Length: 243
Image (cartoon, rainbow, N blue to C red; front, side):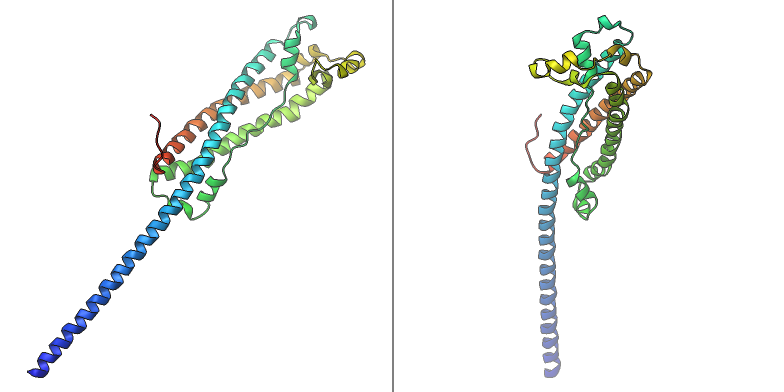
């Protein structure tokens, strides 16, 4: 009986030790999980912040671009209205509109976005709706870039060669600068009439107009999606959201 009682005490003691060890392991495990969650939260906040800054930069670029594209559409439409005018009807203002054909492709940032999508950072993001927005955003940017590149190709390979064929580039220089007067007086004259009646020029202007209208629509849609993403990130970061 004494031996049996001691054995029971020993078993109870052993089970107690095992119980304490298990509890200790579970606590340590829980603490480790909490630490991992905390680390992920910190990483997630950094991801959100870098993407939020990138989106805000893109919004500024898009706002500028939308204004520029709307202005370009008006200028291109005005240029088409000059077709058929007699040489004496082509005013200095019309010539100024015709001669300025330069185009600068828009530069949208996507470094933070690609860093998230192409690495394990994407899995850290908990919001499913935000994940969907992030996953689709590169496609939106790529569509925009394709149209942007088409316009640049039209300008460089079609418009610019036609303009240089018919116009003297001195017309692109400041008119109020006297040091160019000699070139204007004795250099080869521009022929705006022949340029406006060139089929290649007309086709290039129409093509650029159509692509610019398309780009303007894409820019507005991209701006809307960028705003939605930025607003959701703002909420996730705990920033004050304007009503």
